[in-house]
Image (cartoon, rainbow over all chains, first blue to last red; front, top):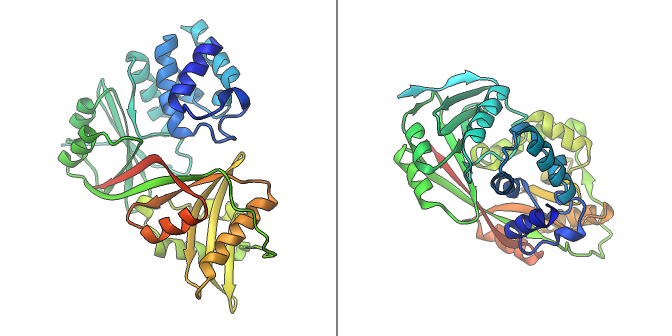
Length: 77
Length: 258
């Protein structure tokens, strides 16, 4: 799953070094505009629907927190 | 024509979640964060789109979350609201069909901003010591911002937000004879800074000193990257930022008013 997440991230910001960062927002690799695209792509790739209350900076901090978010919603649905 | 219905923020969130769970699409939206400073909302929904407005005092900002342009167009053209409506549309590549939908619903384009980023603020040899705004100057700075900037397009901070920024030393000022002649307002997000506002009413060289003060302040906090928004017609400001290493990164913010 992590590889798939990195692939999605690199399509949104091809120039960013996601593997070298543990906090994408703090490091300026993602902003709130990117997160909207990212949520759509994650929803489509993993066939989930992330609710608005879960679209928080904490859940999009890095690939691990995104993977945890996806796993939570895969289990629920 | 349809009147928007008064709602709470939680009702808007629930409506968006319901819509999102029923469609797997790349959403058309201009909502990028929770709207914490706004308390009055009104909303209009269909089975494929949600349009809502947040009252900002004198005008309201319109947000949308839609499956496609057509579904949003149907709502937009039927909206009736008591005060002027502003739409901010953020994108890398302009969606002409979307802009046409705004125009068809009676909105006129009023401004276009470009984002600039800087990943290496200049290192300064300057001995300048930035002066920070004092809490008692909050009202003066608030009034200067309201007089100078455009509330519809510049997302001005509320009084409370400005007080908080002053308290956290995120407002640098220049004073001449005890009068404020300029300031820089910024916000820090992690290791990034949003260079929000620069106002200069001082004598020649005041603006340069404000920029130096800002860079000095960033150096002292260990920050060397950030972003700002500049109006596309403001060539003067653009040249100043270019000279300090800021570069347009391709993200645009267009504003429409009805």
